[in-house]
Amino acid sequence: MSSGTIDIDEFENAEDGEFERRNDTERIVLFLDENDDRAWKASSIAEALELSPDAVSAILSRLKERGLVRHKRPYWAITDDEERLESAYRLHQQYETANEQYGEERLEELRTDEMEPVQ
Image (cartoon, rainbow, N blue to C red):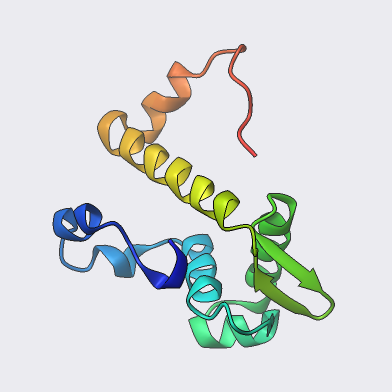
């Protein structure tokens, strides 16, 4: 995922406009990854992506808990742990594939008490 790239199979199989439909969390991670030579204020990220500053701050906090971004008040940057970032990207892709195959509601039905939460 580093350097703003995607797997060629994902590119080839994507529908027109699919990458524009990414959710806000994906957009923030991709933005920070594509601009990994800089650290950003949450307000600057919000402005660049045309998102609410409050929403960006909340998303960045969740990403920090997952170890996907670094924070030194007031700046944010993508993690320097490329293995962790790639692992999160693969997990996200697997979830998206399962969601497409089974539907979000069906995935909730398949959940069991033995399943560990993903962080």
